[in-house]
Image (cartoon, rainbow, N blue to C red; front, top):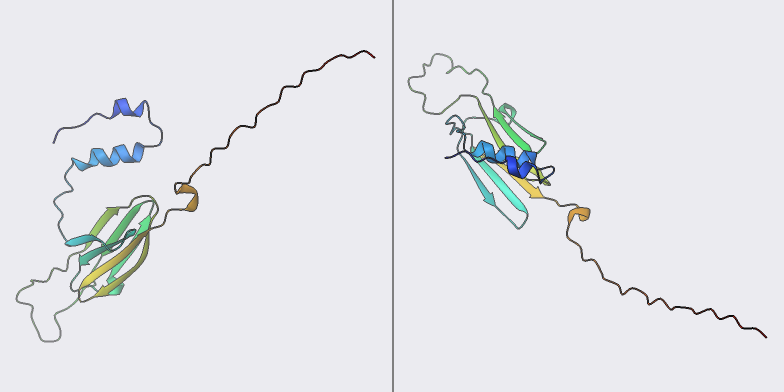
Length: 155
């Protein structure tokens, strides 16, 4: 992908630095991390859900943090032994630590998270404050100014 120069837009825009940084970052590879796999789905008009496959992790081994429009999900497995008198011959279930980051749009908040059947579900909702919602501005007619003519009358 070619690099796009946004310098001309910086001259005529204010406060879009974060957007330009995100667009610049789209062309850069993320290091090839594909673990854990995840889905993002829209569950309502202003509701979303991120589902991550985290088989083998418990609630205490996963942390979720939302800070400045970035949602970070981290997982760290505690050291486990195969058990008394048993030996692990093949490890097919990944037990490595992970960290996944998601960029959230403005006014998107984390509603809750659940872990069920090896899937971590993170529910998100967009809550736009009333002062940021579009509103209709009424146009009123300007009152007609009546010109007064002063007359000097002599009696």
